Structures are given as structure tokens and as C-alpha cells.
Image 1 (spheres, one colour):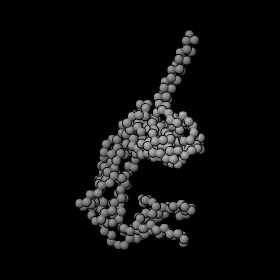
Image 2: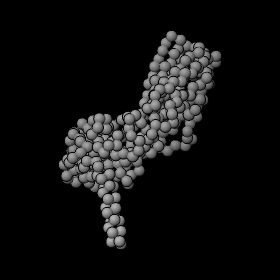
Image 3: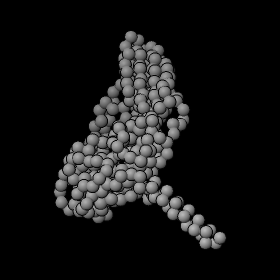
Image 4: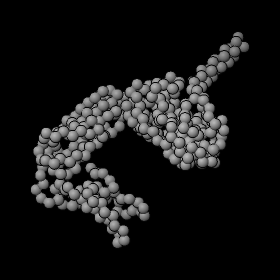
Length: 324
């Protein structure tokens, strides 16, 4: 009985190892055959609230590195837009290199489904330290949970998520696909009153997790549309104006409509501003925010230290957006 008990435990242990082994080994192998010349120096992926920033510039060339457990995952929201930055490096030699990345969105254990390749993988850069960037949108059909991100730097212009290549490096990471959350809510901040000819900014209260934002600004019979997250618009005439925002995420679309009263200035503007710093270091850039009243339409900034002069004509805010 004791022998059978230990035998049963041993078989269970082997079965457990086999199961977890199959999970870890489900993705195809990838890597260089030569640990020389080219490598991946850095991978940066800023997620919704967590970021992958893995800098291996000081390390030597390796053919493959598994960072799925040692580097915390970035979190990605379905429908949201992100950018991955891949820095190519060298261990000696100046050769044309390209980089690409893949995410297993449906969690099926491969990286070959449509839309899982994030970039084109056709660039060829020689300078070590060059950053290759790809913008991508997480599909609404992405499966929630942890999944694989694969990054490859290779000499040449052709990349494939599987197989071997002579020079370069493959790195594997984990990313977390979030479940659609926060509901669907279109909204933005707008002043109640503004002046003719003065830039008016409408700030979207939903800055991330959305597929698109579509603005419609109606000024009498003139209709202007925008697709940016936030909008700055100049009204040429007075009166009540209508602003509509339609936001879309993986749950659908929602709209918000507001009005603003545009008036004609009755007095000359009173210039005023605030700075984010009173003391700055050499080469440091302060941010200056306009607080002028009575509807200014032109700004002539001038910064001088007795030697150098910086002239920032016609900018409401010099080196910064309105803080309010």
C-alpha cells in the first residue's frame, strides 16, 4: 500500500509537470543561431496603467530571452490605441536591422492570426540605438487575461514570429488584456462663456480606452468636425453655439451635446500668466500659461535674460497647455 501511494504521488507529479510544461511550450520557438552582431536593446510599451520598459542595452548579445515572468506585464484595453517602441542594438558591426512585435490576442497559443502582427517589419536601420515604433489598436475581440507579446530584432527586412534566423534576438513578454470596463460614457468639459476670436478648448473626460472620438461644432450655419481626443476651436461670431461629441468603445457609441455662449469683448484684454516654476536650470524649459482676461486673440511672448531673447508670437500658452 505504501509503495502504491508513492507511485500514485509520483505519477501525479509527473502529470502536473507535463501539463504546465505544455502551457509554457505552446508557442513556437524563435531565436538567432548566432549570438553576435545584433540585439534588442530596449522594449517600451506604455499600457493603460502599467508599463513594460525593459532596457538591456548594457547586456551582451543573446539569441532568445524569456521575460514573461521576470518583467511585469503592461495592461491593454480593448479598443484602445498604444505604441510599442523597440530599440535595436549592436554587439559589434553596423548592419541593417528591423524589428517587429506580435500579440496573441485570442489566446490560442500562436502568433499567426490576422491582426496579431503589430508592425510591418520591413524597415532596415543601421544605427545602433535607433527606435522602431509601431502604433496599434487592441481589437474588441481580444480575449481578457494574460497573453504573449513577442518582440524580434533581426538583421534584414523580413520578420516571422516563428523559426530561426542568423543574427538578432527574440524576446517574449506577458501583456494583460483587460475586460471592457467603465461602461460607455461620452462627456467633455466646456466653459459656459467664451469670446469671439479666442481659442476655446474642449477637454474630453474620457482620455483612453476608446476607439474614436468625433466632434461636431456648429456655429450658425457652419459645421466643423474633429476626430482628436480634445478640441480647440475659434468662434468668429457671437451667439449660442452647439458642441457635440460622439465617443465609441467596444461597448458601442454614446453622445453628449453642450452649448456655449460666445460674446464680443467689451474692453481691451488684461494680460496675465502663471509659470510652473520660478527657478529653472540651464536647458530646462519652464511652462507658461496664459491667464489673460477679456478675450485676447493675439499673444506676443518675450523672454529675455539680457543676452538671449525668446519670442513666442501668437501662442495662447508658451510651452504648455492651459492648466485649468
